[in-house]
Amino acid sequence: MKSKVLPSLPLLVAGTVAMPAAAATVSVTVPRINVAEYHKPYVVGWLEPAAGGEAKTVFVWYDVKKGGREPGTKWLSDLRSWWRKGGRSLKLPADGVSGATRAPGTYQVALPANLPAGQYVLKVEAARETGGRELVSVPITLPKGRGAASGKTELGAVTVR
Amino acid sequence: MRTRHALIAAALLAAGLSSPAWAHRQWLLPSTTTLAGTSEYVTVDGAISNDLFYADHFPIDPAQVKVWAPDGSEAKIENAATLRYRSTFDVKIDKPGTWVIGTERSGLMGTFKVNGETWRVGSRGRNGGQFGGAGGAGGPGAPRPGGAPQGQAPRGMGPGSPGGPGGPGGPGGAPMKFVATAAEIPANATDVKLTETIGRNYIYVTADAPTENAYKVTGKGLEFQPITKPGALASDEEGQFRFLVDGKPAAGITVSVVPGSKKFREAEEAQELKTGPDGVLRVKWPVAGMYWLNANVTDTKTSEPRATERRLSFTTTLEVVAP
Image 1: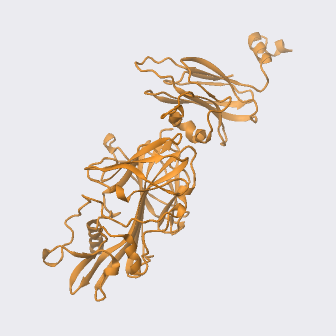
Image 2 (image 1 turned 90 degrees about the vertical axis):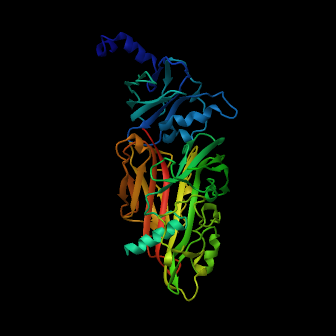
Image 3 (image 1 turned 135 degrees about the vertical axis):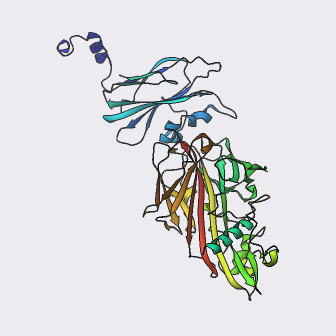
């Protein structure tokens, strides 16, 4: 049966079988940037229903440990699109959502499995201290969303599969 | 008619109050309109100048600035300083929600004659409460959310207010005489020409999630009810703001929307827009940046019986981010 449907892609078929039916995964690349003063970026990913509606934050990487007079949360509003789409109302740290900033590399994050099926836009926004800010949008259809886009400066490939 | 307006405008300037008709724009410029957390300060510049937001003319008087926390309670400005071209002050944003920072001024001004000599009605350095005695002007405006008293009277712009073009001198070139309030107009005065003014210049700063109390309607004068909220404006989304006069939608009023930093563009890109029948102004932003928004309405709904005209204005500064 499987070999009839996708005879030439045995690896992909194996992957599909191994994963839970409804869980898509986003892969986010934090690019290496050659500058004298580099700080790991704040990065956030969220899902917006394509037809409009409340944004669902999937992950937010910021300086979770920094406290004191200037806590790490101070710069969350620099993720300005996310901030006004709902970040400003989110209590942080949030279980399963907040995490420490990441060094350059590619990271996998599971999208929530409990979202209603339909069309969404996955948005990933990065803002870097003394650096730039970038927003990447990936239209996807859940539950079996697939899509890809790439940033030019502060973000590399953003892939949903 | 024109002469009379010019006279009033001159009187307004002489009294140290900004005239809506004048190119000089009074502005408040916050360091940001959006904050994460409640351990932050916003620092604000205030000035009067032609170009936005170039402080190159006169400072505002920080003593006129009031602050209302999201719950409507009054808060203080800190570290205020009046500089040559601008004033500057801090506001500690220590509660979540939307804060209001700004000035509200109301008063009566104009002219009258006694024995053929023209006098000016102004309010330099006096307490606005005195207008109450004039039977109606009733102190500046309605209370802000939380019932904070309006308190401060219209005062001069402080040292170096726009001096006006010489001002209309009295007969024989002598300086025009003036009384501070309408209550002091003598009974034998003739040619009483009074204009009532209510002018607001508010900016909005939001820590964490926005709150609505900042836009609570008092039902008096020209008021601003944003549909798209300050602190959440983006250049690729239409801005929608409702204006109210005495609590009712202000249809068809003209609003200037001017982006700052014209030095870095060919044109100022100022827009003169009109509100719809529902009082809603719809704004498309030519660029991202800080915008100065100014609405003016003139009508005859005066609360002072001798005043023939009422001038209402509302000014704010909006931060419009790139998408």
